[in-house]
Length: 195
Image 1 (cartoon, one colour):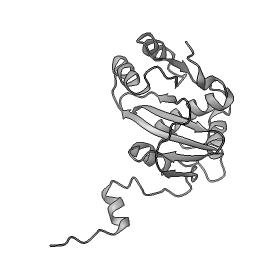
Image 2 (cartoon, helix red, strand yellow):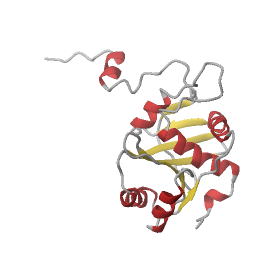
Image 3 (cartoon, one colour):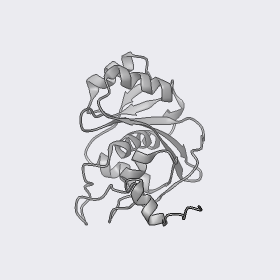
Image 4 (cartoon, helix red, strand yellow):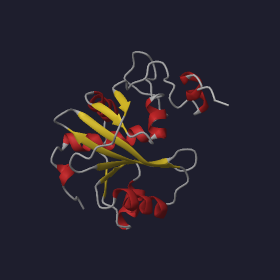
């Protein structure tokens, strides 16, 4: 009664295709591995509600070896402000969270509930700048970060030669951009509690 091992390709399909890569993906510089704590973690957060999920991603940058360790903390739709704050406090505790600046009222409300939260730095070219920062490092993805892995396998440029990524498969990736851009533009700020 020995079960035959399913072929690797077939097993990936059974997992909902989350290991299958789309053609022309933006990030090829990543692999699944152990999340390591090198100094202080900074968290990135993107907000959604009905069809889009709110996310929280832990980032830890090893600047000496040019490695960014990434861990998906949550990826959930339809969260209330209170639920986001509770999940943030559970995962990030007092660590800094850099949230999507397009949601200033939500950021203010979550911050009022005790989270160490600031808004992301946005502006013209901030998406491509953030992508280029991430492409300059090796990305190590914690194995249980299934939605992040799915996004990395599907996040592509809008057109082959454009500098504009598609506007989907990006809730985790945007959160990572916010946290990493903030730290690498402000290399000393990751060590401080900014109120």
